[in-house]
Image (tube, rainbow, N blue to C red):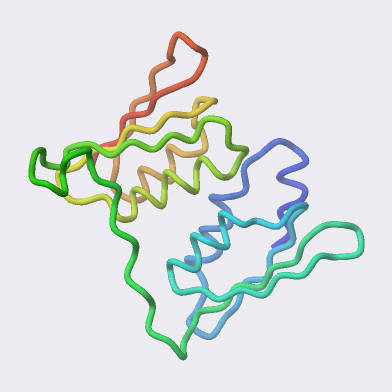
Length: 164
């Protein structure tokens, strides 16, 4: 899958990549070509049991092959961030905050989706972004969540995500 044209046109390819990953059969791999090494994607897919091989191409682009790790048990996802005082029993976890301001796409989407993947039942997510996360909405809905975004006085946005 060559995502360079999508990125050149200012479109976020994350949704397309995740659709392709979702369609993979157990014995299939995904080869991705991108204008940069997609570290957030590599990290996220590693958490879902995918190994990768990455190599820089002579023109500076990257080719990354993702394959399911069949020889190892997949590690459980990391624990969700907790609210202050939750470890001491002072306060129950009701909301998780993810601040992605200052990050370049696709990192904000990846961080938000990673947090949603481990979000405890009954907990909502509040995400701070530099841009209105238009490409995030279909991904959120596909995972059974709903989102509402509000602009902030400083020009950033806050998105509230809850289970549908």
